[in-house]
Length: 131
Image 1: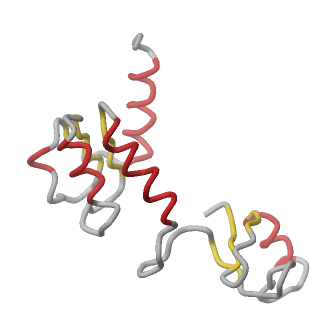
Image 2: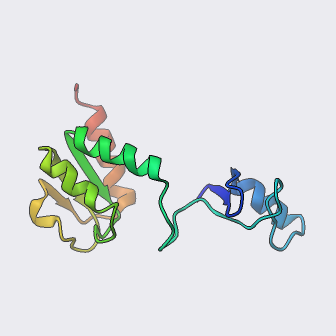
């Protein structure tokens, strides 16, 4: 949400710069490189994922000791399948989501608190203990 990507040429920029252009009077600022459409660099529903990122994510899921799924229903694949990979490799799963997910029964812990509360608490707990 802090970045932009051009749908035509893939050039990346900052959302701050795009919004500054809007504030300066451009209604829908085009890509400065090719004139294409800029969008938030978040992945939209139905949009293809970058295959290299998917490969890296699979490797990370297979190599982790703890898989943290935060703010996700764990129902949209391929991303939801990373939890399966981590579990099959012996990792613990922690689910942080307001609503139940299909993986709750497989999780070591399920946390329903709001993410802005639970994630800082998890980070604090992890950084205060030696690894």
